[in-house]
Image (cartoon, rainbow, N blue to C red):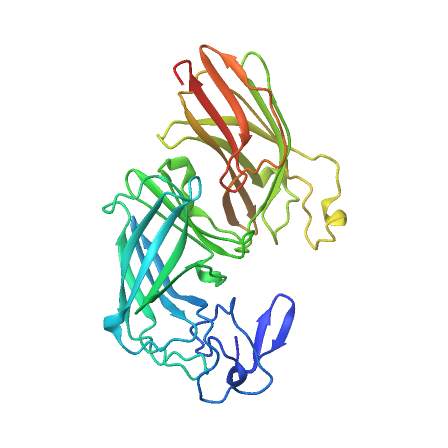
Length: 362
C-alpha cells in the first residue's frame, strides 16, 4: 500500500488519505467500514451514528496463547477518558451462538489514531494476551467479536481482517491444535478452531502460494449397508500447476472432538475435464480429482468432520493445505449398523461435511 493508492488484485485504485474519514493511519489497513469523501472533513464533530469501527493491528499465536492488538471505537464519541472505556473480546460458538466466552481487554493509547471527523479517539486501542487453554475455552469453532464500552454506550461488532499476514495462522500444544482463518466466504470474518492435535494434520505445515481458500468440491458420496464409505471430489490450491501426478498426494481424514480419527484410502485420477480451459486459468489443473474409501462401522460415537490434506511439489517446493470438505446439498440415507446410527449431513458450521455416530441410548 502506498500513499495515494491501494494496490489490489483488481489493479491500483486511487485513495486520498486526507479525504478519508476512516483509518488514515497506515497501520490500520482494514478499511471494511471506511467511507470516503471528495473533500477533507473539517475539524469539527460530524454526525453521531454510534456505529462500531474495528481494526486488528497485530495478531499472533503461540501454542494456546493468542496475542491481539487493535482499534475499537464507537463513531461519534470522544475516547479521551480511559476510566469510562473498556473492551471485551468475545468468542461466539458457531454451533450455538448463544454460547459465548468473554474476556476483558487492556485499554491502551491508540497512538494518534484519527478518523479525521473531529472526534478524539485517543484511547480506542486494545490489547490482550489470552491463554485459551488456561481460560478453559473448549474445543470447537468460534468467531470473534469486540465489545466496546464508553460511558453509557456499548456496541458489539464482529472482527474482520483481510491482511494477508493474518489470513491463516496455526499453532498447537500437546493436546490441541489452534487454527485461525479469516473466512473469505464471510467477509474475512475472524474464526478460530480448537480441535484435537493429530500429528498427521499439523496445520502449522500449511504452505501455499496464496492465502486464498483452496477449492475443495464434493462431487458424490455413497454409504452402503456394510458401512463402506466412498467419496468423490476434486480440489486444488490456487496459482500452481497440477500437471505431475507423481508429485501430488491427497489424504482424507475423519476427526471428532475427542481425538478419534480415521484415515480413508485416497487415490487421484484425471476426470478428463480441462479445468484450465473451463476456468480460464493460467495453470494446468487436470490431476485434481480423488476417490476416498473406507469402512466406518467401527468408529466410536461422536461427530466427525472431514479434512482433506493436499500436497503438491512444484519446482522442488512442497505446498500443503488442509481444508474441511463442504456439503452443499448431498443427502445420504442414515445407516443403522452394529447398534449405531451413522448420519452424514451438512453441519451448521460452514456447511462442512459431518458424520454423526450415535449409539442406541442416544
